[in-house]
Image 1 (tube, rainbow, N blue to C red):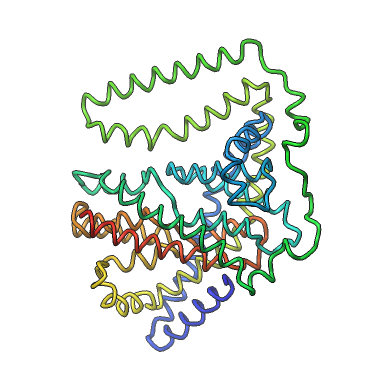
Image 2 (cartoon, rainbow, N blue to C red):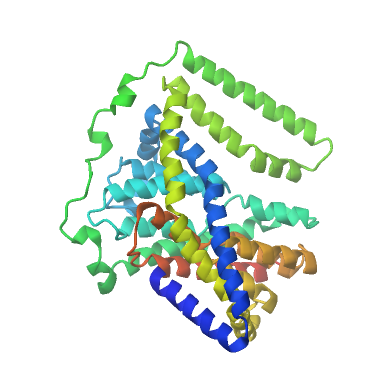
Length: 434
């Protein structure tokens, strides 16, 4: 499907540009998008190496085993082909949890680690398994409890109620996630996709292993020696952080509202606390944190460079499509059809761009909030739409590119159905509430 998507966008863009005299714009758009793709991938290097390193610390400390055991009752129903205690389970939990909290910088490295672990169970390399498709469908649905990025944008636009989209975003992204799970499950049972299921090929998975719960702890866990009084010192540090947080909130509430203080804590405290928490847990469990982090970071650097060709392909196709005027023509054509359904013409570009380009959709939302006001119906609607879906094609390109998947099976239709459900739910709930 990604191949068909790429070919259609490129050929249609060039043909339309040839008839409309926009060949220069398309040429520049292709080059600019290629440069942007490389810049974007290189920008991921730092976050990828850091969080891949922290994943290694968590693995060596036994945290991943604890997470998989705690979430096994739910995940084993969603992912029956994955052993309940497999490392892929904990990596998926960390990725999905990071997305829910609005920590995109952490979610991507954790998600790529999950894909790497799922690929270890894949008997047919290069072909997506049902578990991979379902995990990516959930990821592209954009489930969010704390849409911090959109809330910050609304606050910057002068909204008197920047957090007013919390409930509508929960509804929109929740509906998208439900549809993602159902679509990925049912599409995988269709004859065309069922026939290409790697699990039905009869091949033996490479590096497959029995559930970790049936095995002794890995050598790195067995060999660690926790520091004396490590647990007491760790709890003391947690208590000190708690006091610091209370002090910060008390100090800030003197000059700002509770909502502003809460958003500041969620936006700026979460990642430092996540990093400190993983480092502290590893140290208290006897892990050589620095050596472990560096070892994991090496893999993160390699993965970040590996995804560059996949990003270039997707972003160049989208850039050419926009530069040719095709996107503008498509929006103009569908706007009269969507307006009676509660989706104004001004909001259609957000719905179209959201699966294609996160930065493009974000820019359109920013323009709408400035022009029409963040607390208008249109402002609430586009803010909710931005938080109720994710950049499907970007996510598929990055995650599949990291492990060399070329046959994506039903990942694209499942992701797009989730996006459509998220946008439709956003329109419905915004009309009902606002």
